[in-house]
Length: 119
Ligand SMILES: [Zn+2]
Ligand SMILES: [Zn+2]
Image (cartoon, rainbow, N blue to C red; front, side, top):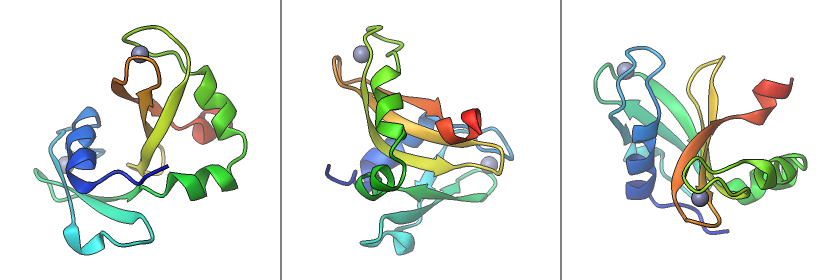
């Protein structure tokens, strides 16, 4: 599973809303981009920072339930089930999101993280 690149992540982040000001324009802090896959994103409006995790191979190894749940997500575009996980963000203590791509039509969308939902 390749790690997503910075332009892709910045583009996909437009699907999220800032926890503070509810805008959706974000930049990745280039100084935070390293091999460990733990990046920082910055709201361009209010400068709120939040973490972006891009090493999903590692994440899926540590969260064995998540792959099953990914197989069960229905795509809002083509209504088929099954997505791949591109990266995830922790927007606030209450909101963590997965950024996923439909395995059938290849369109991207976001899902609330399962861990919060089912805990
Ligand atoms: Zn903001
Ligand atoms: Zn689809």
